Image 1: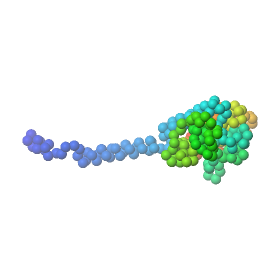
Image 2: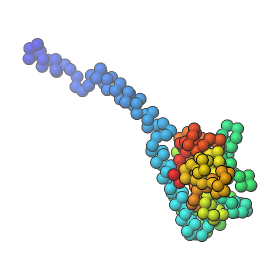
Image 3: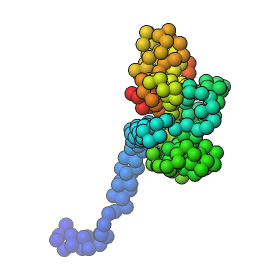
Length: 250
């Protein structure tokens, strides 16, 4: 081809990418997205686990700060009526197949964590914290994200329940008898926490007999169901659906 013909060909070729080149680029991008989206979007993505660990720490710090301010742990009047047994928030409405996933044994009363969160956040709540009776100084001990709608990550605008990034309520247990140990309604179970003469995740049987009295040395226990959104009271803490639970004390 002569230089004249080459110049003529170059002048006739449109600027930019050809259709074939554009299709190739689109195909490459589609392949990359196909590889990346399942990793980024899967339920157990590390960013969500980091969010949960941060939330657990903030809730615990808020509870400790409340106790430092009022010389008591934040509980509602109804729960105080049960006496001073340890109490687990977040159990209301939780089901595992046909049985309860987490059941609070104290007088059979199952409570949403909204009862606790309303106090910590100094939220206007005529049911759980009327006239801020449980937080008269109206201090905001917890500055949690407000969910766009109930059932999503954050504190529900209407129900006040604090949920993890997978939409499950945080489970929060308090040492209300000031015994120096906290018994969680789920992790106190021998089927869940027993391992030989000791307990899993640093827990210990208070009686030493392996009864349903496994406890954590500290005033508060908080945990999330993890990416699978499940817990089974008939499995050990390190098995099956319980293995991915995220714990504040571990």
